[in-house]
Length: 144
Image (tube, helix red, strand yellow):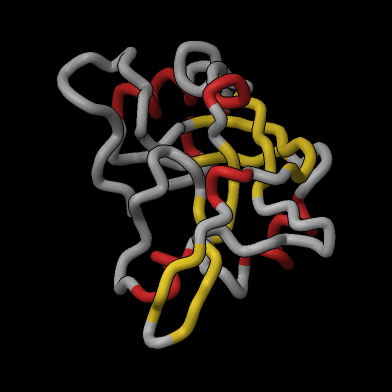
């Protein structure tokens, strides 16, 4: 469960926060800025593990919820695997990106890439969540 939705008191400051709402998945891409290796438990791992044999390590996402996540694609919000989710009791530190455990990410992201509707449910972010719920009539009771 997420516990931080935005920085400060400004709901429009959507930097480094979990994005609520609807997205459509796009294509894989190669983030060269996340290719560093980390030493975790005595072994060397990629910061973001590769998702395919081409060295791609992220899945682009386009936000479909105006005023909530519509800047996601241009801001570099992507889905990816992350070494820190392999070693932590609680996932985190993704700066707004949905991040998976390294061994889970390739299978999940290969399955949903290329046009899948993705919904980020954020009930703790009540102001953002309310904006999303107001977009689709009848959606209000589906995730409770």
